[in-house]
Length: 72
Image 1: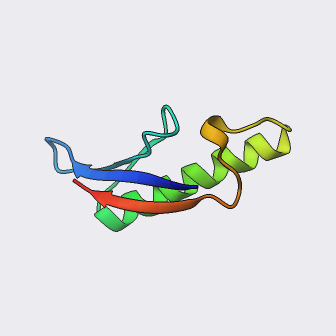
Image 2 (image 1 turned 45 degrees about the vertical axis):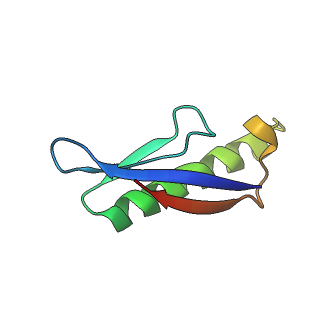
Image 3 (image 1 turned 90 degrees about the vertical axis):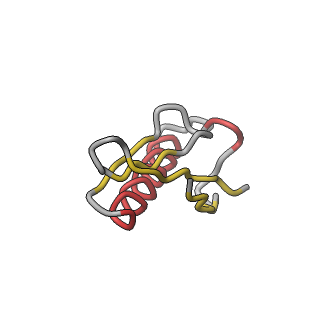
């Protein structure tokens, strides 16, 4: 399963990256690349914590989940 990440700038020019498949998984950065790196890290940490705790991530995700970037 692959995840889509939406990337956009807010009214202050800050880059926002969010993963709608994981509620609350939003990150930001001064550049598009930084926002993407930060949200990838957030997704990885989400999956890692769920694996460590023996919990099933939402929507059937796993540590092998890929990330597809959709720029809006």
